[in-house]
Image (cartoon, rainbow, N blue to C red; front, side, top):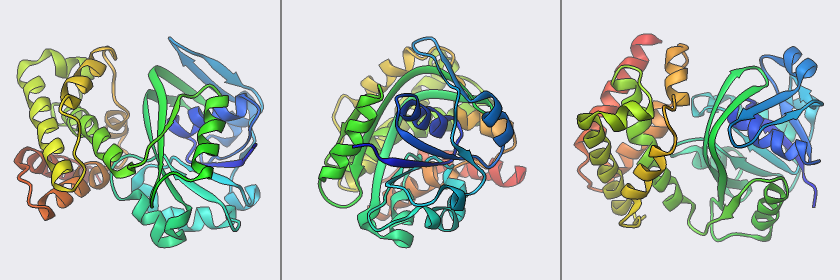
Length: 306
C-alpha cells in the first residue's frame, strides 16, 4: 500500500522521515513555510556517520491547499505552533485521513483529537539525533527508529500498514499497544537532558555526563519522571534509567535541538516537555520538586527572551 503522504513541518524530523519515505519511492508532499526556493533547487540532503542520502526531487509546496487531501499526515511542527494546525491540516483531510504526530512531550494527541476526532490520531516517538543546519540540509548523528501507536485503543490494521511503509523505506518502526506509556518512557530522557542542556548554560549531552553534579541531577530527574509516569498509570521498567544513560553515552557531544532553538531565539516547547508532565504528576499526587524547579527555570528563561 502506497499512501499519499503530507509532511507538515519540514524541519529536521519532517525532512528526515518524509525524505526517507520519498527516497524509497513513496508519494510524499512537503509543506515548506521557509526555504522553499532552496529545497526546490537543491533537494533534501541528509548527512550522517551511519547513513547519508540525497533526495533531488522534492514535492514542496507553500500551502497545504496546494497539496490537497492525503491518506497520512506527518505532523512535525514544534508543539509551540499547534495553534496553526487546525488551519493547516483541514485541506489535507479526506474521510479516512490519519494524523501521525511526531511531536515531543504530552498533550499533542489530545489537541489533534479535539479538532479532528480521536479516531484519526496516531502518536509517533522519534528516537533519533538530528539537527537542521539549513533548509533541506539535515545532520544525522545517531539512531533513527520510530515507535507508533493509536491514541485510542489497540493497534489497527492501518497502524501496521503505516509501520510497514516506514520499514520498506529503511526505517525501523515498532507498533506499541500503550502509546501513553511510551510517551512517558521518552520523557525520562527528554526532561533531564533537554532541560539541563539549557539551564546549565548551553552544554552538550557529553558535558552533562562528565559533570558529576549534572549527571546526578539527570539521574534524579529521571527518577521523578518514572515516579510521575507510575502515578499516572504508566509503570515503566525498572532498568529504564540505566538504559537511557547507556544510550546517551553513545551520542558523543550531541547538541540538542532544543538548545539550538534556544540559542536561535526560538520559542521552546516548555509546556509540552516539562509543564504538562508536571501538571499531570501533581494531579496524580506525585511529588516531583526537581521537575517543578526545572520547569520554573525554563519557563522564566523562555518568557524573558520572548
